[in-house]
Length: 269
Image (cartoon, rainbow, N blue to C red; front, side, top):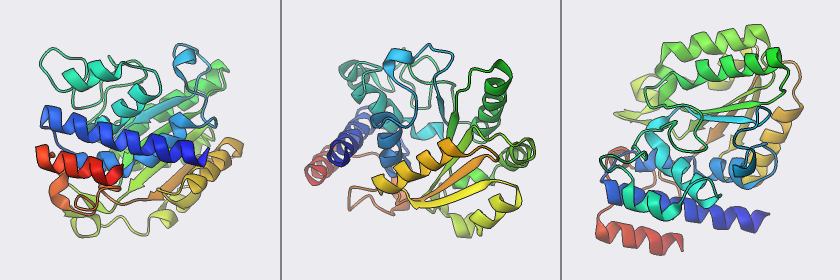
């Protein structure tokens, strides 16, 4: 399984870079930082989602709240059988394409359209409560950025989820420490993050967001939690996998030119 994860994560990163190159789109760094998390969610067997159960009322739900980084989610969906990879590569970001450069529910496997930050988690909480009311017993996983936690709607949602003990809800924070205009600690410091969630009555798990074993263990712990919502604070590196992209603010906006794309692909291979 470990080697399968390694292979899939590399393919996700390469395809994400190809998409950014094709569309001349932004947010490459943030797309790469969450690639390993997506690898375990879609490439493992802990979360109950697959192309085969895409319409099942009992499937688990995954919501990418940081929808501006959808390139790696689309890449993951293509590589795991939800959508056609060649169609994605040739039309991503084009006029008339369903493959917008922000997450679109028109794409098979995407639960909701996102990218206007602070919306994904409140919707995820609603879905988690609906799961309990309907007795369909599915779990809901929502992935946000760390800069996205500047949004007040998230903190209202975090308080609400803790109060209502939505134990079938898992929030994953892609904690890469860089947001649109600089370091998170300098723009609006959210530390100490774990303590905040504990005070809001959440089960808190802190991990290396690039360690497949730690990601698996965290998701497994979430699946067994019966009392509280779970937050997985995934410490990541913006632009992970490509040395000249890692921890570089410019790659929040920059997309690879021909030479950069080739260099990145060679490094990943």
